[in-house]
Length: 370
Image (cartoon, rainbow, N blue to C red):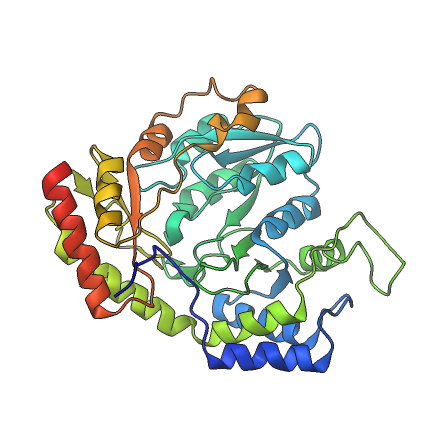
């Protein structure tokens, strides 16, 4: 048994065949407003899963977020409320629009705190971007109610949560638009890719314009846009992966259940994403360690088990945002999480033996270091 990674893509023969079919066709990219046949097929599967009116494929999760903010008219003078406990893209796309990211704290479950959101709203607030961290839905009802009362647009950063539900509704259908990532290790992958979900027909039309340089027929740009199209090769891979999503999610849930049972009661380690009104897709299985995270990681590595920290530095404390003057912001729960979280393997490719090794190795590391 080799080294067990925290996450990895799971590519089968059907995905390989679909990609080879695209390569053999010679039609690697389709620059039409509607997208190519594989793009449209993938979009249809996303729509059916989420129950949304529309889905728009793009070439990354970052492109999804940027495209939505542009389509909503976010620009200079606007503020967009975001968590700092997230991947950089959530805030960077706000800067890319010329707007100001406003960082707020999180709850113990690592998702945006609705109370912190409420305090951060000003007359300049144009949008809020809750993140479903690690594939676990945020408290959307409270945030949507607040946003509606203040005429604030809500954009879900659902990069890690494809297939997760909040009170019976899929993430991506809980806002003006949901943004998903199809990066190599995500719940489903296209290598690099993204998707946007929305029930707003006018917004969907604008999203399609922006992803294609603002063009409908070619050389007829009607708004500022970029090359955010998803290539047919990527769409073929993503479309086949969508057919396997249910199996992926069942395997992740089974693995997480095993880890919860084996690791329950470990002093100094706790799992905090477990509310009964939402389903977790376990893109990452993450524990909060009381102390000695680096020593636990070292012990796991010595045992052949991967682990990772998402994220060791909150966005507002990265060099870019320090330079912009954000480092003085005090976000106590965010900073605590950044010092104490650790993710261990839970992906659907784990064998029973590997999963047992993950649990046994963590228990051994905990006995020594926690």
